[in-house]
Every structure is written in structure tokens, then in C-alpha cells.
Amino acid sequence: MNTSNNEDEIFMRKAINEAHKALDCGEVPIGAVIVCNGLVVGRGYNMVETLSDATAHAEILAITAATSAVGAKYLKDCTLYVTVEPCVMCAGACYWSQIGRVVYGTDDEKRGYSTLEKSILHQKTVVVKGVLESECRELIKSFFAKLRI
Image (cartoon, rainbow, N blue to C red; front, side):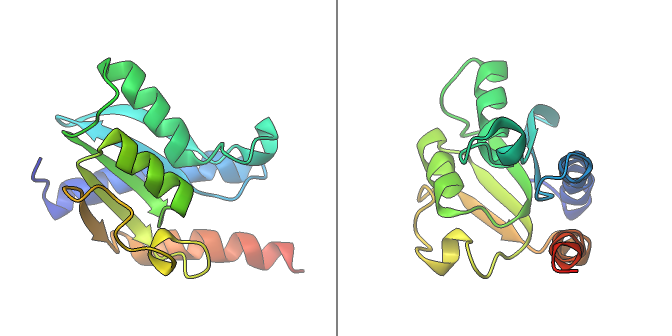
């Protein structure tokens, strides 16, 4: 499950592409991909408004797709790449799916899981933050700046 920084950046770019899909739909631009053995097995982007479902976060949709693709409820050998730090709900889903690794781009200082409970992820989950951070942060900041105009 060890992944090089270069691979982390490659897969984070795929998550950023998912975030752009959300942006194109008028959604908060958060994207996620799940990788297992070098292959994308799940992907998702924020669809809360589109589906009128408060749980339709990028991570949740990617986890659902990944468990279906690998045919198992546990994702121990997988890495979740997500553009923004997961919220508590998504961190809980990572816990229950026992995702092996979480890599995120930028912190969520208001709703990120670490603002409430740093140990919510499974104890064996490895966390890497700050991959393509400025790109991920700019995407989310510019979205909310446009809303305030």
C-alpha cells in the first residue's frame, strides 16, 4: 500500500477532476477517488444538491462504488484521495470501511473531522494531507468567494 508522492499527485489530480464535475453541476467542488493496487475502483463528486441528499458527499459515493467494484465491505488495501479533508460523517464511513489510507488536499477548518475528533478514523488508517494543497484550496475558496458576490 506504500505509494510515492508522484503517485499521490497523479491520483489527487483525478480527484480534482471529479471536483470539477461537481463545480460544473453547481455543487461544492469536492472530488474523491479510491485506488486499489494502482487502479481506480471508485470515484465520486459532491452531489448533495443534485440528489437532494445531505449524505451524497464525494467520499461516500466513492466508497459505495469501490466496495461494489472490489466485492467487499472492507477497503483495507485501498487509498481514498479527496480534495478536502473529510467531514465527520465521511471519516466515519472511512472507519467502517476500514480504508487503509486517506490522502487529502486541503484542510477543512470549519467542518473537517480533525476539528472535532482526530481519532475517528480506523486506528490502522494512514493519513497524508497537503497533496496538491494549493490547487485544492483554491478550487474550494474560489467557489465560496463567487457565492458571496
